[in-house]
Image (tube, rainbow, N blue to C red):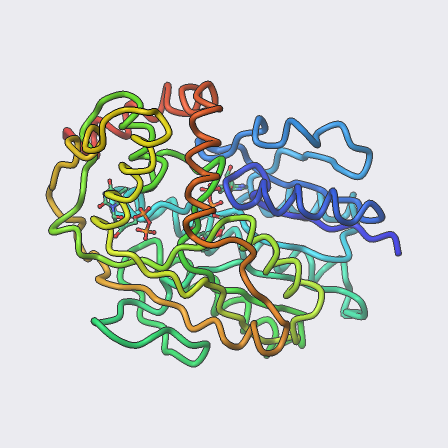
Length: 350
Ligand code: NAD
Ligand code: TYD
């Protein structure tokens, strides 16, 4: 069946993988990538599919309610997959309001536009809100986040994402609006902007710069390969129960210091140089304020109800990721020029 789906944030890290997955897998869908192209958005991420006839890019800022509505009127989407967001915790500490504008107001603008054009007839319609495990706050040494865990965000980023999740659920409960949500753990993979831990370390190793580890490095994250997140979104968008949330993760916890050591080991191997070369760059730096100690996802609901399973092991995923960065150093150099240099200076040397 011919369908039009608006994917927001499709020029970003995860969004570009979701756009590619949908454009290639569903030739009968018209995929409209709606993105403002902020510092994190990059159309070069989609070079390989940009000329396909079932793909369209539109430059729209989701904080602009009128423009969002006119775009929805023009394309008449049957579905929305919403990934556009300000996504970096450290930037949210420096500028919380930008996160409220895009993540909260922007989400409500999208909900309103879809509600207006669907005119109360939600048959065959779906709004998929892509969220994060960070809304649940932090875990101690044990335990996992389930879909029933209470929200307890600590950073301006996670507070803004939690707020957007609440609005999405409120539209379901108030207007019977057809929503599904996913809350995913930390992603890694190709096209990841080098402000985040893994690409930042790869970029710094390649430039012989220090690898900044916050605090004692014992903070723990649960890592999922980005293409496996895209596959989970595909499943939930099509088969998830309306009004429900699904946690997405790979049962793959790493302390930051162990992860960076593993990364250093693999990069040295791939560059055929003595082990320990990259690890010498590891530098412990001042901790992030309000730093959540541990995130870990219980992904059993999506597994039991929708048969979801990640397709790659962490070793394979990390190896593919490093290979991608080693063969795409132009991409890395391009995104790490300009604005990134000011950000880096303020964040790490300021
Ligand atoms: P990203 O920062 O790489 O990309 C965000 C994209 O949104 C960019 O293309 C940017 O141009 C666009 N955007 C930002 N503000 C916009 C605005 N006002 N209007 C229109 N477009 C705008 O982010 P990401 O890491 O790909 O994350 C995508 C989504 O997934 C986010 O909602 C994030 O909260 C969620 N998420 C991310 C992770 C992760 O590990 N990165 C994990 C779980 C959930
Ligand atoms: P990040 O990639 O920013 O993702 P998030 O904060 O959303 O989990 O950070 C992952 C972990 O790595 C987190 O515990 C913070 C830590 N970290 C560092 O130790 N150094 C860094 O330079 C960065 C960016 C993150």
